[in-house]
Amino acid sequence: MRTGIANLPLHSGKAPRWLFERMTLLARGIITAIVKDFGPSEVLRRLSDPYWFQALGCVLGFDWHSSGITTTLCGAIKEGIKGLERELGLFVAGGKGGRSLKTPDEIRSRERFLSVDPDILIRVSRLSAKVDSAGLQDGYDLYHHCLFFTSDGRWAVVQQGMNKLTRYARRYHWLGEGNSPLTADRSFICEPHNAVCCNSTGRVLNMVASDSGGARTTVTELSWERPDKLIKDIKRIKTLNLPRRHHTTMDDINPERLYRIFLTTYERRPKDFEVLIGMEGIGPKTIRALALISELIYGVKPSVRDPVRFCFAHGGKDGHPYPVDRKTYDESIEFLRRAVNEARIGITLKKEALRRLSLHTAL
Image 1 (cartoon, rainbow, N blue to C red):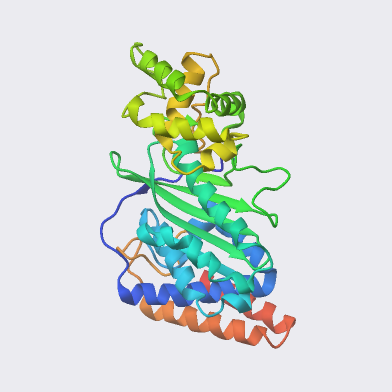
Image 2: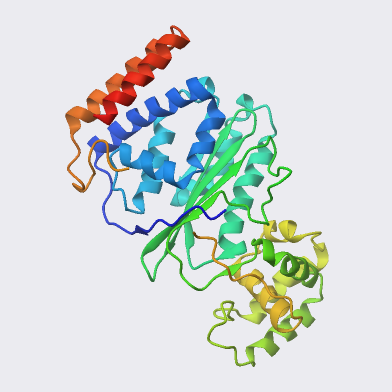
């Protein structure tokens, strides 16, 4: 679903401590208010909307056009609801860099609060990361991965990659609306994203596009071939003069290094592309090599279609459109805290508090 384009340039620096502390408090109030009024699943749905996500980051006072809004906002939400996860029925795992690798452990640590097998959510986390690194090869290397999930197994993923050459980031949004990784009308390997936001790079291998269905089947069947034959085909391709317009290239592909991986796929014979891409050791180069064989030798083309498609309430970290007004920010936090507390008394008071909050922030 192509929902829009957002350019996220790389900015140096990070949120100052005084700002991040306020961001966590305001994030806690906003997320709590949404859960109390609409339930935790509504938080997932909104986080999967790239524009709502961007607006929330702006309201919390971060740079409206910086790549850092993704990592900082996810971190503020994670820190903000700490200690309230069980009450809210909402949990966050993962983060930037090394923290993303701890996602499976963080999911398992919440097992006693879940009504579903945590392995399902771990599989969600792993497959979404594999799709955005190997299934969709768009020039952006993932460095941030956050899984938001509810006690009944619903989930959303927000992850981001960086293009080192352009120094721009690309953010990927996922939404799982059922109690399992796959729903009736959504799949990890066919148009899986709720949104992808950034500028286009022009060099894309999109194995998860709807029009890559034939290529996914062919690539999976190719993985069953004897390694010797696949290596021979790759070497044959390397002797061809590929046109400049070609989006899937042999750059950095070493046939000899792929032999052991192909031996694994030959022995295990993955039943479909989802199983193939989820296998350990299967990365962008393996998928790219098989896609090239599929297209140039067997004539089955993968898609090269790129899936890409608030102003501040409290000011911005770098002073745009104006410096963060700490007094107003603190008043908003306190106002929201009181509104949520009053909401516990009854539905009438809750709605009135949120209405006053809306009027307050509009001013």
